[in-house]
Image 1: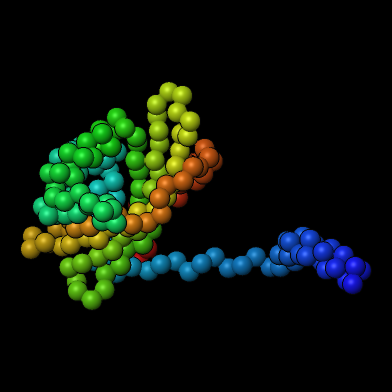
Image 2: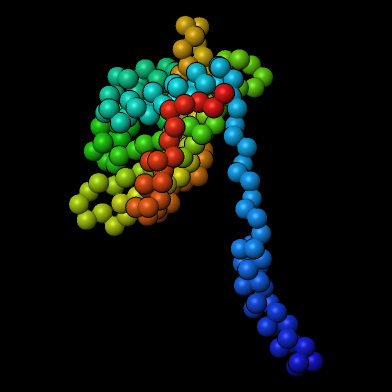
Amino acid sequence: MPIRSSVLSVVLASAPLLAAAAAADAPPSPAPPQARMSAAECEVWARELSFAQSVADHDAAAFAAHLEPDAAFSVEAPEPLRGRDAITREWDGIIHGTDVLLSWYPTRTTIAGTADIASSAGPVLVEDTRPGARQHYRIGTFHSVWHRGPDATWRVMFDGGGQRPVAATEAEAAAFKTGQTAICPQ
């Protein structure tokens, strides 16, 4: 039995190395299929980019114009932020870049069921610009639900969900910045 257990230990210890060697010899896996979106989904894509730009431009009025009057943010929190005015007030430091610099972009928008509701998701980058900040970059994901109003304008109804931002390196932050595309894949 001791010989079997030592052989088993060697095999188990070698498994990751063998798997890595096999992966190195394997042909590269194909790139994941590119998402294709409808013209309406691309409208939401453009609106999401415009929403992110309102924060990049530190424009509170433009930020507020992207929100439904009765929107809810932090929807997974015990007490979500409710209403355009309350959300804009609470986000003031983010909008003006005094707390952190926040940037995001969509990688997927989806409309299903009804033509006036859409989902948008993608990565988010949080930059702490304070001198001596322990962690300068954090990356996560966002998820927003959009509503097209009677005036045909898409506005955020719900915001929240996604992966909470985690510590990121400067290289990961650079990759985030180069990953953005303004062109919606149709």
